Length: 356
Ligand SMILES: Nc1ncnc2c1ncn2[C@@H]1O[C@H](COP(=O)(O)OS(=O)(=O)O)[C@@H](OP(=O)(O)O)[C@H]1O
Image (cartoon, rainbow, N blue to C red; front, top):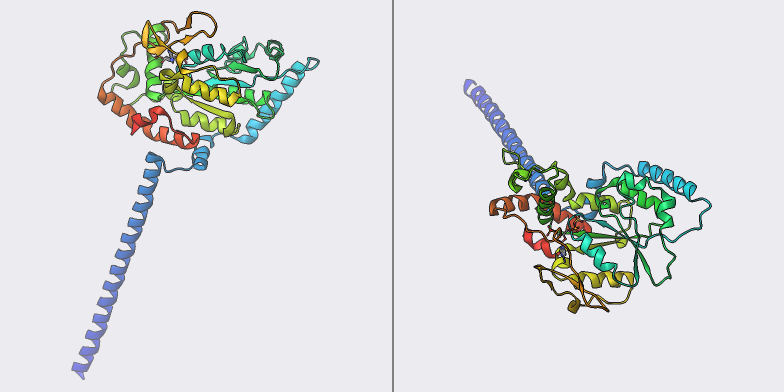
């Protein structure tokens, strides 16, 4: 009897031990699996954030989440009412067909100078109207009054190179074009080269940057982290700015110019613009000899007379030597933003391969 009791107890104890072990093993396996699952999701997200697996919609959503479309529309409507009020009584004018909205230090002066030598392109006298407040304060009457009456085969061209990074400018342009039918030209240069160019410009103008401050001092904090909060740095995050334009204007209206190709082979990018605007082809390769004073850059030979349009000394400046280490650090930093920009733009640029 005692022996039988003992066996029953032993069996119960064994069942309990095995059950306990089984439950623990099961819990361990579940934990392990969920940890793995979390790890998988985390790795996937990290990868998505760094190497840009994000799709166009996700990128758009991410960079415009601080923009309330209702608030934008209400501001734009208010501005439209103001435009109508100021222009009431004036004969309705055709607005500019195309606006060069940026990007600062990407070759915009050269583009404007050369493009407007085309007899079918008429440039507006006032530049930067939609950008800085002091320009916009000129008022719509003054802005519209300068627009010439031109035949349909001519293109009215306006320049506002500070507009690309300005939300106020985007909304002002949208207010002026209720049909959103303006073409927007944006020159995009390798963001690091643009950064260096901006630094050199600041050094020359001795504005914001002390002459003695090296590029490295300008770009890094003393502890080596990148000073991403500077105005120049912020302007080089093209994806952020393009997303905000795409919230307001269709992609088809935005023409992105490869600024590096424009510098080296201007006829390539100019011919694309001729096609976009459906104007005669005049910018052929043979018209772009090297600049005798600065052979890394081109000039444009005049069409009917002798002489060339070359840029002065303020364009095509010598850049400082930047160490490989600094370049690599900047490239690593910009790469994910660039990738997102290419996805959003739906195109890559000649400088894209600098980041491979
Ligand atoms: N043909 C030709 N000649 C001289 N320079 C040329 C030319 N084509 C493009 N570029 C590039 O234009 C860069 C200056 O850009 P921007 O005119 O947009 O500068 S600015 O924003 O108006 O200050 C300028 O930048 P830096 O090289 O840093 O001076 C040039 O790289």
